[in-house]
Image (cartoon, rainbow, N blue to C red; front, side, top):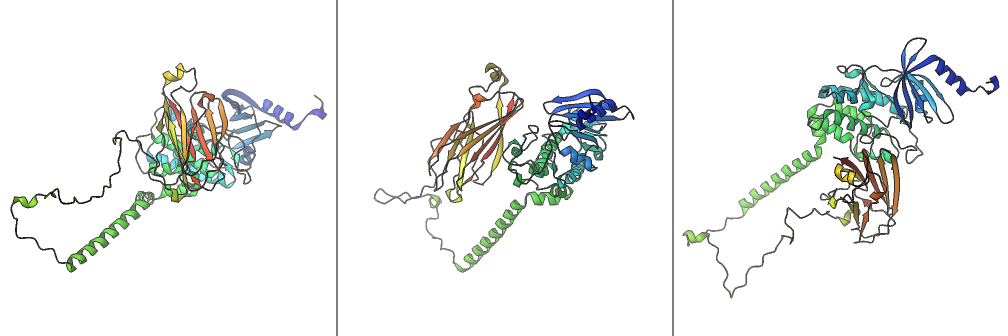
Length: 465
């Protein structure tokens, strides 16, 4: 190769080949290859990443010495690829420790969360969103020392961009990535907070009912506006004494209880005043026998008293009557209902506006095998959109994003305008999708009309058992 044709990328490639020896392939995916390697000059272990795309996040990581992530020693980029040499962190991932049934105490969990909050604050202030926080990307150098926790693998990370409505690349891991990461809006610091909540809820286990669950549930809210808006607020909640945490989580109930007690006191006082001013009716002195307690029925010539029936007629017993949405047209809200196998996945009975939610659907492994790897015929996903408002729901669009091991698929359905009082019934084209775990479905309803849509975004996670 002549000197004139020797590019910077060629020089970087030759430098890496001469300096670093690949010892073990740790990970191989469409995103690239990750090797455990050794610096042949110093015998120092390193991580060598050969990425199939350009990722400017590693340039930013190299500029700073972030406390929560490995140091970046070397970074170079080509036309459509890049190479990273980074610090090798000795230790075990939280995924490995979970597989070994290692149990963390709530105190250790809180200390790890606090360390991550401090580290993520540094990253977020530099505009870096990790987008793939999960147990496999968290390494503890010593399980007994929560302060030895590191966040690794920034291959899915991105830099914040104020002019983009959605992320350019849909990356992340199902079960930890929030709904907005599937393409409905741009990810931000709240997306990492969502993944933190999912990760540590998994580590604590379903039996844990301590104070941390209140914090983690808030982290995992489907609606980004309902989560902690930044890691400072999450850290403040972690450091709040338990009694104040409880008061903060239940302040609405406490306020309601206080109002109820106040109203009861007012009513009781009014009753006492009334009994002081109104004399008690005289009790007749006749008919003091046991017949005093009997009720006299009207004769056939007398008109029976008219009693107002306040019980709504029902043809179904309480055990079989389905829950119906409580429609409140005055709130200008559209109420869709989602179904799996004909069973509702969502209840609107409280009538509270909620922009997004989630549900789980179980599929039998035997039925899946019988259907050749596609959704069984008895697993239809459908929804009904009712318009109780006074205006048309114009040109609604149903967007479907399906995520499985093969990748992410997009489908959009244009629906007809729904007039006031009308409903639309839609069956999702599940036959278009393969059924292989892990898999999830995000359904989004949009319209240019001004009405709000209750649960316009539904995340459905499928469990194969």
